[in-house]
Structure formats: structure tokens, C-alpha cells
Image: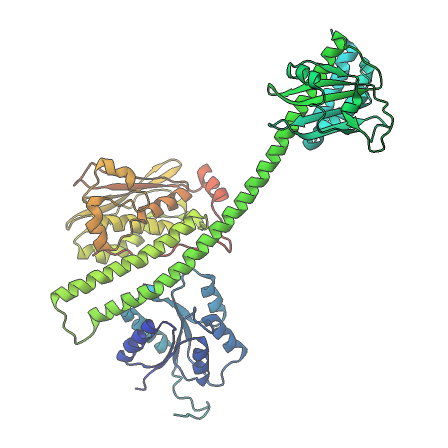
Length: 140
Length: 449
């Protein structure tokens, strides 16, 4: 079976590297971005089955990433975007849902094991975006 | 003896004082009215001035009213020192007359003085010398007859009273203004504090998440065999970081509760159902520890409460009982009705509490020495009961703890208003409503290890 492809946009290096490692071990193909701008550029390349997006990040925050995606939808489609944040009870969460976020996970509340479970659930709900006959030619 | 006319003049003056809505112009109004009224009883003046002194004897305010043609008279600041014999009389609380008006007044145009005499009357406020009333006359006054002396003294008392009222009003206005300003400042500070707590907790969570996640991976990495010691070290570090995360959440909660930014979403709540929900949630943990949790389903009326928040309270109380009860023990949730409240009692067969410690339970970080180990192992924060009490109090209920002593179990009881009662209506009217500034409580996970 084709590996599900995930993009992790997270500015904290230690958190990012651990999540990458854990998700890789769980059998996902994972790519990461270190801030909002980097994340947006990678999202625009498309074909991610799931995007995990931090909110408070340098250069461009998660909400602005969501806004730019609405203003300029990428040519190549992606799977759902789920917020991966440590903000709780914050109006930002509601705003994000209004900007097409599919869900949100609170990092301090979950273990890496639980993260893997959530990622499995989200990726099994959505179809595969890894190969799309109608999309731009695969550059790989 | 004051005659009828004299009485009516003073009644008119009194009415003037009473009718004045704007207390800040009280003195001016009184003096103006006196200029018209006093001639009726033979006291005709061209100008009346009330000068008040501060505590160091410097003139601090003066109020003047005058007949037409006497507009340009200005009081001389040092007039009292130029009239030594008058000063002496005034200090003895006697009236004094001067026939040298130029010692009291000056005119910019250097007009010819039409004033011949000035009567000086000492104004005493709350028994101390506060100022002088100057009554300027076009007549040449040599002595003041006893009746006039008396009338002037009565009038001076009116002036003193008006001054006192006006002064009180002015200080009240000032105090009110200051209180408003202070209040605004406090609100600003409160918001700053809250913003700080919010940002700080987010910043704290980032490294805590990294610690928690790395520890979890260290304990759960497949294929790596950990020694028993290593497992213990890692697990204790993991529990501690969980506790830190809980602490941050509880501090956020307390910051919100204390700044009044927790709104209640009130509805009719069936406590039996809610308790069953919570007991189910803790069943697995309870079984692991060999404890029974029983909710006694009793016929009780519905209560008026915020379901989620009472859920937190129950989880906290039952969680506490689970922490402090040894294997084989029982935790019972009982109910009883005592109009207009339903009481919910969480009773355990646990370690109990010494009587001298009962009062400290609901304080912030009020955990007890003998429970420290259990708390350390369980990820407790020492804030749970404080938060529970705050939530129950927000509902106009009470929370209490009882224990027959160490080793004999503990019962926590809280009350909530029955739906439809007066107290429920008051709760509905007075409970903090949801606004864009209110937030929900952070969930704190209950860990029982």
C-alpha cells in the first residue's frame, strides 16, 4: 500500500524532529516545514494526505497560512489541515475552523502515541492525495 | 428675640440651600440670596464675601456677591494681618467692625470707596476657625446692636453649613473620580496579568510538551529493553511533567475565575446522570487500584447548573478519593435534598483528614503534609479543591469537607440550587454571562497512579 504523505509545519525543533521520527516509525511518509512561510510553500506543492499546522510560528502564523490558502487556493490539492497547537480555549481555534481547518490537537495533552492514532484516523477518513491523475505532472 | 420677619428670612435662606441641586454652587447661591433677603430685617449690605483659609492660614477660596456698582472690589490677600485688633476679636469668636475698608478691598480703577464699614464675622466649621464673612456696608457702623449681632451670627452659621456641604460634595466628587480612575487602572492591570498568564502558559507548554513527548518515546520505543530502575526514573519524570502541565492549566483556570471571566452555561441538570457519567469515566482507573465507585441513584429534583463545570467538580472530588483510598476501599456518591438545594456527597473509606487540617483544604496549594507523597505520585497540583470550591460558589452553593479523623475516610459535600427556586432565579440573574472576554475552564487530567 502507498504510504500516506504528511506535512508537519512546526517551528519548535525538538517537537518537530520527534514528531517526524514517531510518524516515520508509524509508517508515514513525512515532510516538515520550520515556519509558516516554509509551510505555505510546501503546501502549495500539494499532494499531502494530511497537514499538521502549528499556529504560533515566526514569519507567518498558522492562521495566515490558512488565509492565504483561501485567497489563493493551490493548484494541486491536499488532504485536510489539522491544527497542532498548544493554544487552548483560544478564539484562534474557532477562527481556524472558519478558515477550513478540519480539527485541532493540543500538543501538551497528547502523547506521541496518541498523535499517531489521530493521524491514522484523519488519513483513513480522507482519500489518497498522493497520486492524482488530473493534477500537475509529478515532478518526483 | 428673632421676630416673624426674621424667621421668614432665615427660612427663605434655608430653602435656598435646600433647593440648590448643584452643590458646588451652594455658597454662591446662598450669598446671592442673602443680599436680597437680609435688608428685609434691616441688614443691608453692598457686598458680602466669605473667605476661607487653609490649615496654614492662607486664603484658599473666596465667594463674593455684590450689589450693582460694586463689581470691581477685590479682597486684599493679606487683609487679616493689617487688622490686628480685628484678628484678635475674630479668634475669640466675636464680631468685629472696621471703618477702614481700604484695608480689606482694592479696586483696579482706584474708584472712590463708597463702602464705609466692614463687619467681620468668624466662620467656624466643625468647631475650628475656617474663614471670615465680610459684610460691607455704605453706612458708617460704629457698634453692632445685640439683635443684629445675633442675626449675623445665625447667618454666618448658614454660610459655614453651606461651605461644609459644598466641600463634602466636592470631595465626594473627587473621590468618585479617583475610584473610577483606579478601577479602570485595575481592569487594565487585570487584563495585562491575564494576557501575560495566557502567553506565559503557551510558552511554558512548548518545552513541557517536548519533555513529555521525549520521555514517552523513551519509555515506549519498540525493541529497547529498559531496566526496572530506568523505567522508574523515566516514569517519575513523566508524571512530574504531566503535573507541571496540569499546574499550568489550573493556574490559567484560577486566573480566569479570579478575574471573573468564567461564564456559567446554566441548564437543568440531572445529577444522577452526571454522577453515573463520571463514575464510568473513572471505572478503569478505579478497578486498577481495586476500588469501588458507586453512585447511589436517588430520587432528587434537577438542579440549575453548568453541567460541564459540575462534571469537573465531581471528577476532582472522586479523583481525590481515588488517590487517597487504599485497595479494597469504596467511594460512594450520595444525594439528599434540603430545600432549596440538592446536596451531593462524595464519601470514601480512605486515609481521612485530621480535624485541624480540614480548614486548609480549600486554600490555594493547600495540600496537607501527610498527603504530599500521594499528591506527588498522582500528578496533583494542590489547586483542584480551590477550583472546585470556586465553581460551586459561583453557583451560589457551598462545599464542605468532613472526616472523623485520620484513617476513617472523608466526605466532601457540595450543594447546588434546585431548579425553579428563588435561589436558582437569583443565580440565573447574577451568574457571569458569556461574552467575548469569558473563556472555558482548561481540562486538567485526573491521574491516579
